[in-house]
Length: 299
Image 1 (cartoon, rainbow, N blue to C red):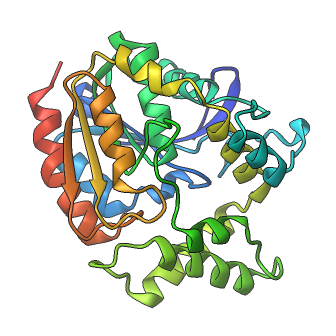
Image 2: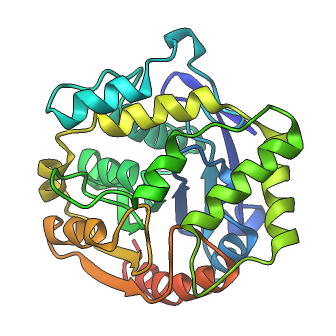
Image 3: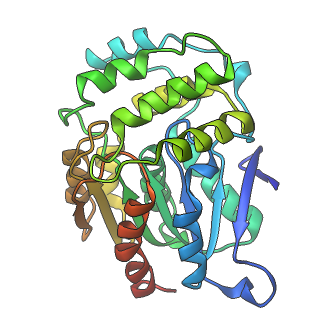
């Protein structure tokens, strides 16, 4: 369903809230760069519902079926990256704080006063800002494979950094699937490989649902422009769990460790063999930590 949140149209999926289940504690899931709400796989969502939670997923602005920002144009990613490297301000169409306000707007539109907030990758960055901005709305914060954004932290492996700048050879569906599958394999969990046909099917489903590469660029610039978040993290008062794979080549584990160090009282848990993805085995391992954490910090 579409909801008006923070003044824009946001596509939302609300699971586990029907009938007598309306009083379930809410878990708000925020996905990462360029990823749609279906990036949270059923084997992550359904166990949370089965554990007694109402699970809300949504497409971030400019991606999936949510409102786009094509009217803001598209700046050069290469030029803005160079500006960032020499300490100049990155120009972006919107900010991660705007995206955090979208998340709060989703809760407002659903009439949810407080929620457990879980974010993955860029979604973790947005979730951090939600917790810092509205501590009274956040029962707990879980940041998965994310970063504090502090200068000096290690960046992506060179092969992956190069892959981020590449573009598919054509907009033919098969070419787009091959391109996306190739990049996912670069960042995937080495200990938990995908079944190839299942991965290709999942990617094709996402492309058919929505393909918005310009939105991905605008989201990347929003991350690059988010320069003050390292200092903001000290304001977070919510109970915080930070989960990060020790085989993450896109956002190295030191980035998650730094997030945990900067958030008062945060608990850091390394996940052996996990890269920058959510295959079924990794979802199961993460939930072994997340579900007890959520139950420990109920309203």
